[in-house]
Length: 82
Image 1 (cartoon, rainbow, N blue to C red):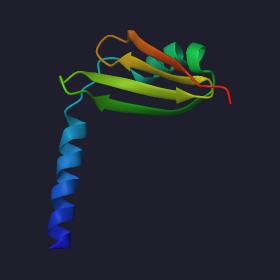
Image 2: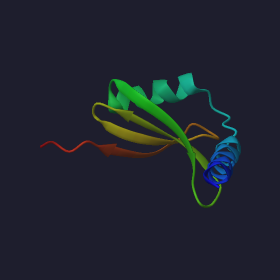
Image 3: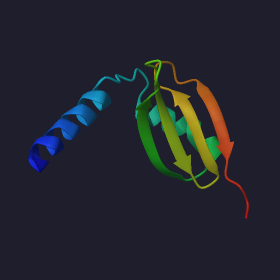
């Protein structure tokens, strides 16, 4: 039973991730984001509820959200100082 549940979860998560087909290369995304976030720590490709794909790029100064279809900067969130 546990194997069946694991197979269903894995197939669902991989099918969700493969639906995004970005039109912007990862190097273009990193070039755009590096001026905002500084040293990049991770890049994630995601999809929102309306079906639009975007990159979320995390760095030492915060994170940015970049549209995966045209490379447009959607949001910049600065890391809070403690």
